[in-house]
Every structure is written in C-alpha cells, then in structure tokens.
Amino acid sequence: MTLDLPKWFDLHTHFRQGPAVPAYVKAHLDMGCAGALAMPNTQPPVSRVSGAAQADGWSIESYSAELNAAGADAFEQLIVPLYLTRQTTAAMIREGAASGRLRACKYYPPHGTTNSEHGLPMDDLIGGEVFCAMEEHGIVLCIHGEQHALSGPDYIDAAQNAETRFYTERMPRLLAAHPKLRIVCEHITTWTAAEFVAAAPDHVGATITPQHLLYTLGHLIQGLKYHLYCLPIVKFQDDRAALRNAVTTAGQTKFFAGTDSAPHTTKATACGCAAGCFTGGCAPQLYAMAFEDAGVDLASTEGKDLFERFLCFNGPAFYGFPASKQRFRLEKAPAQTPLLETPAGPVTPLPLGMGIELSWRISE
Ligand code: DOR
Ligand code: ZN
Image (cartoon, rainbow, N blue to C red; front, side, top):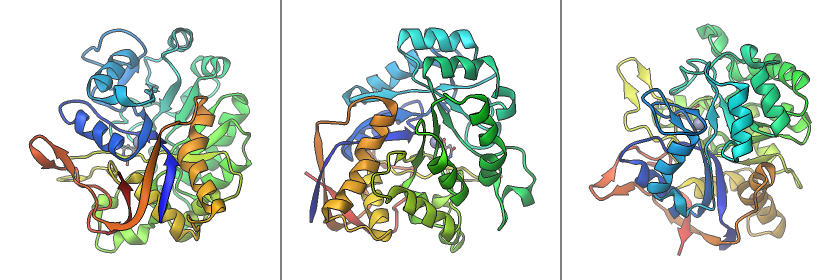
C-alpha cells in the first residue's frame, strides 16, 4: 500500500542553532515536510522581532535568516514564534504584527523544560498588555501547558499532574480574560487537555506529537528508555486513548501535527535527563503507525481523510496559510529509523524510532 499525500507541516519543532542545523533541517525536508514552526528556545532565545542577533538573544529576523541559510528556505512556510520573556512589550507585538514578521509567541513555564529559564509565570501574563496586543492583532499564542514549580508529588501522580493542573487552573482564566486570543495548546498529553481543547472555541487548537499518540509512561519506565523522555512526559492509557480519539474524530479541525522533534546530542547527564524526542526523518511514519494503532484503516477513504486532516490540512488552516500543492508518498514496508547523516557521517541525536522497526517508509 502507498499513501500519496500532500506534503505536511510540522507546526512545532526545534532546529536549535549552530553547525548541526543544516542536518536537522534536511531531516525534515527529507520526510516530506513542507514547512515548520521552529521554536524559539534556542541559545540565546529568540526574544526580539527585528534586528541583528545580540549576545542575549536572536530576533525572529536574524534567527529566520540563520535557518534559511541552513536550508530552511526550501520550506513553503517557516514560522518562528517570539519567546515571551520579561523583556517582551506590547510595542514589540504591535510593531511585529505591522511588519508581518510576528505570527506567534511562545509561552514557556519558567524552568519547566529545556531552555525555558527565560519564561515567566502565566499568571503574570494573563490580563496584561502583551496578551491584549496579541489578541488585538491576531497573533497566535503557543502554550507549553504545564504548571511550573510544583513539588515532586504534585508534579505527577495517578490523580493529577502538571498538565492537568494547568488546564484546569490556568487555561479557563486565560480564555475568560482573552476571549479572542488565538491559542495553540502545544504537545498535549492528557485526557484533560484534549477535552479542554475540544470544548473550547474554534480559535483554540492543539498540536500532538507522535510519541504521545504511540506510547505511555509504561513504555518509558519499562527499561527506562530515556530516548522516550520528553516534556510533557508521556502519560497513561486513558490519556493516550483521548488523544487518539481527538485525532480520529471525523471532521475534526482543531488537532494537528507538531512533532516537538528536539535534537539532544546528550540525553543522560550527571543531574538528570534532557527532555526531548528527536523524530527528524521518521515523523510521518510514526504518525501513520499511531493512526493504525488507533484502529484507522489508512487504505480506506475515511481513514486517509482523517490522516490528511491531521498531518496536512488542519495546521495550515489554523495558522492561515495554504496547504501544500506538492506531494510525497508513504509506503507500507518495514524500515529502519533513519540516522542523521552529515558530511562527517552519522551523528547523534538518536531518533525516537531507534530500536523499533518502522512499518512505513518515505517512498521516492
Ligand atoms: O521534550 C521537550 N523538549 N519539551 C520541550 O518543551 C522542549 C523540548 C526541547 O527543546 O528540547
Ligand atoms: Zn517543543
């Protein structure tokens, strides 16, 4: 079986900075990806809209130029959100919107994940002039939805976790204070978040990663497979079922692909584990496997429609750009996870699919 598909969009990924960026971008282009939203938690962060890169931060302009020079100019779309920091002002939002450079901003919970130390608490932003300016100018708010600074026991247990806390305690307040703000709930992992997004107005959508559709905490813990460690962490069976239900509901328009592919060259460190799963080269294959695990027959018209909506159509519609007119093909065939190749040979980071056989491959 071969699926002939429009090229897809990864509306949440990480390309980082430095000499490995061309390899990361190429891995995306090689898997039929027509465009990407490249997250701003670089070192230093993308904390301004315009101007030259400075020691304390890139601008969207300078980081986009860096990515384009590394091959991202081959994408049909490249969106770089502005990292919301204490330096972000309403004037930056207004000017960024007027220049056309600013399309989205990213909320990171302070110290909640990789390179998130520049973030500020959601409570400091709700009702403030930055969110009001974003609301007024139609700028999308991309949210890493986890409550920060929880104690270990509150961070995750059977009854609640940092994400459920955020979606029950913070998100209702955010929507009430900013009813027109366009929001993408990034990499949702729980039943609670899936239900929240499904019940919210149409201008609230969500990205879902392949790992959260495929795996549960049990997969990670069994053998402590730390290449599966990302944040928010993979959750429980009911949560995975709710995510699968969200993406396989006929006619759904709110849920779309965002891999959160995050290249970490060192995962295990002396004081813990770096959060992030790298899915460059294997994301559509993993998504196809997840849809099949969810009971979707990709050979059927209905099944293919569900898959295309999630992978190729809903994201562009939400962000307001056209779906791709280019095509790529996925072929049902056992395949090994591609390793990242550079002129120096294969390099780390190890891809998520490492050690498992993929049941789909990108066909020429
Ligand atoms: O697993 C993750 N990795 N979650 C994030 O929020 C950040 C990302 C990264 O940048 O490595
Ligand atoms: Zn991310």
